[in-house]
Amino acid sequence: MADPVASRPHMPGYGILPADQGTGLLPWSWALRRLTDSHDYWVSSVRPDGRPHVMPVWGVWFDDALWFSSSRQSRKARNLADHPDCVLTTDSPREPVVLEGRAEVVTDPAGIAGFLDELNRKYRTNYAVDFLDPAVNSTFRVQPVTAFGLVQGDFTGSPTRWTFPPRPPA
Image (cartoon, rainbow, N blue to C red):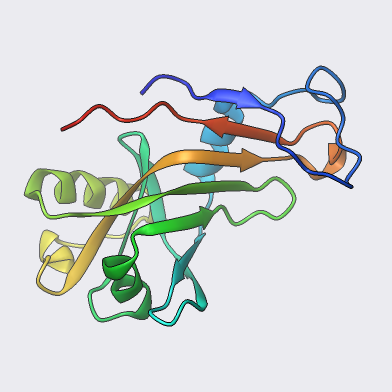
């Protein structure tokens, strides 16, 4: 994946500095480090009646996307089946990365196996491939459309929005 385009987000009323002041625009490598190192991620989805739903998950940054799994019967999985647009955040409120994208259910055995290898490595677990049986658990892949990050210590000079080029058709 090509690096996304960085810009200063529109944040009226917050005294945000121009992109060439303060810390300046954060590099995508800064966001990647946080997406990789975060222990937990918050997944925001939309219920059938339009109300928001947020839950924490374990996940991994893998193959240019954020991956996680969930029971097919969970509220978040059912929400994402109906409305796949979602927001995920890293676990640090002081240096957050907020990622917007569309959750895709992965059923390809090779994709699930790759995700499981990364999950086991990161969390020092030893889940077998049957743990992610697509009949029971959904494996989700969320490739970012936009992302946002900032450093609390430079709230007015670090906010950065990354916009990703459209994915080529499969």
